[in-house]
Image 1 (cartoon, rainbow, N blue to C red):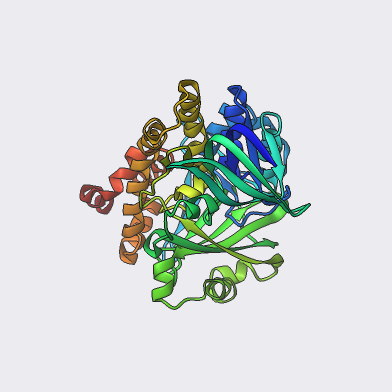
Image 2 (image 1 turned 45 degrees about the vertical axis):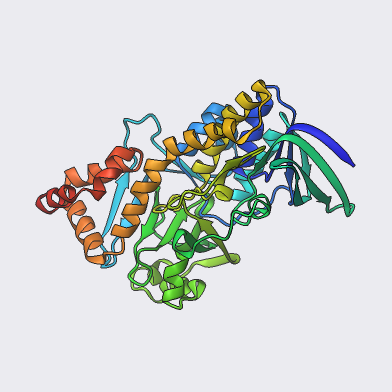
Length: 406
């Protein structure tokens, strides 16, 4: 069975749903395929940043998010390897003074359901292969998992938004992720963790640096708890990340008290996050890649949702232009990748530098010691949460001289 569309989007997560909504609103015939049945869980830290809120506002669905179970977060708490803790509020002069923590099972589903208003949506359709004519990608083959029948979907442009293990990326021969540019994470949900506030918490525990242990507050006293570390560092340390995280929870002098009466809900899940510290090709003749499939995870914070939604918004504009011009070539679609890296490239570069700085435990200790006492340094850290120019300052040696004198 063969069907023809303007665009076929593979993967209904935040990137895929976002691009489908924008393109559908522009009047294009869009097919959105996902191998799962929604709602479905997605292993993640569940933090919805100010960047995500900006795209939600552009989509006109902020109110929908406000209506589902979530918590609002107003800052980021950091602790150093020696245990110094500083809470950094989101700056108030950028128009977005809070973010959300919302389970991906809930957040992804609300985006996916909204996409049904603007696109043809098929759940439980697993894409098996791409279809090429010469050098151009012109369609996909997919299996309807409900009926075990194979379908062919043709389109002018194929969008791969199918995550870190993207079948579209693999079939295009774009290779495996480099362990130096891949983060491994584990997470579980806990009820009854004490000391939860209105900030997400990033703890640079000695055994994980430059990775970190996190506690993110959700609704009704629930917390998303986990750890992330570079895959190469984990391999070098011969670390079992789940076991190390449990050791932190059960034995660390700070966290064992906070988790003393906490109960795990469900089990531990792990996943890989391809980082934007390496520039992966994300467009070609008749195709583009978005989100995790394009390796757009922030190298320092691990944020993926905001970058995925941003890539969906930028891709929609470039695809619309290509469809209007009736030109689906690599040349015209290069506008997507150019604009994407103009928006995110400096951010990835600065975050990668911050991650490398994080390897110096003494420096992390010093910065947070000073921040605990210095209004100037707390303001610098606060501004860096939303301002990439401020984040760039962390790679300037003069910043650390100022920090020492603060």
